[in-house]
Image 1 (spheres, one colour):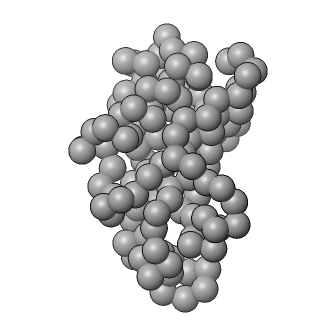
Image 2: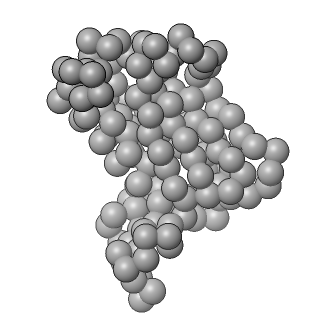
Length: 137
């Protein structure tokens, strides 16, 4: 987070450029930037993303087409590269967000990042893309 105002909120680097967008518009914008921009997040070749916006303040990011060899050094324990990928995806989304150091619930949106294992990808039909709730935000 880079900018702070008199309310105590801290604003991400891209907040000012996107402040007038609804969360639906913002989710669409973040998906476009994430999937088209070489400098947004460095990912292994073939990596795909799915963004789910529930119509409220929640955005779920699914990172797919990763091998278990890339993801885990032991069951449930990420490799350094996988943890770095997870953290860089989170950091990317925080650039569009605001937070408040004294109030964990005072955020523009809440983002959850999931790096899907091979088994998780087989269990469900995970498709890359942008998925928006019919609810208005």
